[in-house]
Length: 482
Image (cartoon, rainbow, N blue to C red; front, side):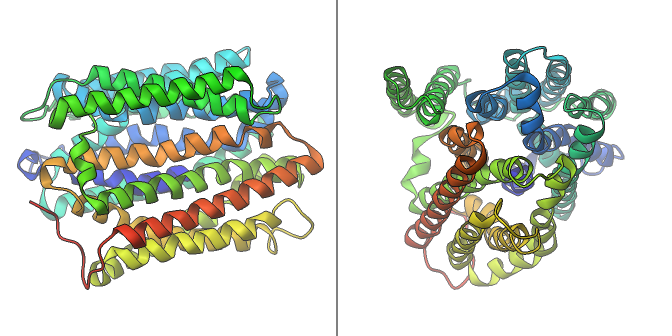
């Protein structure tokens, strides 16, 4: 369900494409380009939300441990957040349509592998390949969208794309839950095949193979260090938080992950503005505040919204369809209020909304401790999800504009991609740290889940504080630096 929130976060990637690159808005193929981008992106949005509902069924079918289930989620998220920036850079060099089609094809083939996986290891391998495909298709889909429209047409196109992504993220758990209950969990991966075939056919016929006007050399060293560092850290956190406890091997993996990420920062400093993550971005206090807010807030939600349907199914006896429907207020509230919140942010500036929103989310996380206990859906789950949705509505709408306004136009594209990667990284870390919850049963499951909900509340409070302390107070919106 966090894919609905990622849709809003990803919008800035399309909006950051330089206006002079928008030369296809007058062609009759522009609407077909928009449809292609929607179909391609929907692969990631549907699959990312539907798998969460399927975790109990997958665990039972494949005899998966809590650590194994966490890798079903993180096997996809890890390559996506580590390689999102390099995926966009590859498209700038070798052609965006080419990388888009390669990503869609890889994602579709990996979905077949997931559906046919005889063991958990094969399923995780398929999820990793899906993440690699998403890291290619997502940034290039958005870059193609941004380069195909200009002016007001671009704003409308990005709005339509975001609405379609939110709808896909909302429908995914419902459709997936129904398929799990009526056919089985393997069916959820077959949803991707007709979408992928349609995206490939439309891309081949309607999408021009554009490249960036200029681009730095590919930062392959940085991408490799980031991927290896995040893998080691994720594996270490997963082992440390599992029932086996904090072992020497887990500590070694965490240490190796920290060391590799430190080397990544050093390598990025050596490349300067040619790095996949230019450190000059972090000379801006507002960008630091927004990065911390994104990491903490999406981390809180990324972990909690994986656990809620799991607890509803395992502890409250919900069907997969009912668990998918239980979270539906989140995308509905955000979709209905995001436009109004965006207008409010334009008048008042983003600081207040980005500070208050996470605090409301924190209150919703506290209410979420009641999920799984006695009481109906209307008295336990709905109030928590509704309050979280209201808080996220405050935050997600101004976040895109604030990120673009916090850096120079030179760094707008990479800042947008980095913010999108950080949103996914937050969920990656949270799920790895909450592995023990997925391994528990009965009273232990509820106790660990409630501890995780309190942890999410604390992360949301920290997110709001980072926005309040590091964003500038302003009577109006922050203007982009030149």
